[in-house]
Image (tube, rainbow, N blue to C red; front, side, top):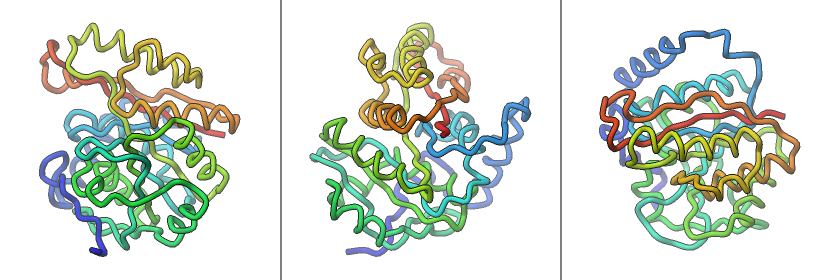
Length: 265
């Protein structure tokens, strides 16, 4: 088995070299108009989008501000499989994860330990081209360069099974969780905001039942599992940002929604 999880989406979803990436991160942070909004809260988990950086990077960057000063030992990125159907949850059983600014270390020992008691398998084809998790890695390399990572990609799996994994992850204070999901896809801007407001309300209230009223997040399963686990752990959520692809493209006829949130104890 190869030792590195190769970056398949560099130059597509995000720049393929470190200098350009650094400019993106600089501009994302400059865009935060009111830095007073960035309180001293440190998140145990964040919910972020996973589209091309020009569309969703601003929203994702807002949430990353709440973990960049964390003392976390490892970051677990959880996202849906877009390109390969499989059953269950697959972990990144590699040694490192490639990014344009240098590789991140994967905490394989911890992943193996988790897999002894939790339903985490290995489906190589799920990791080969998955962008929902990969686009988070340059953010992690930028803000938490020495932190170890784990990539968990879920396919056809029950919410309860995924929530069980998140429950276990939250019990270890050395862990930070990233839930990767975009919101609605290819509606008018008006309709997108209507549907996305359902997702955002569910996150705000930590009420997973609200998601069933019309939330069309592509990472709906992961979002629901995170809400359920957060509720059980007595966590609180804070919405950080919402926007659509129209904010960049100017096309209001077929938009994708992006939101970010943090979860704190």
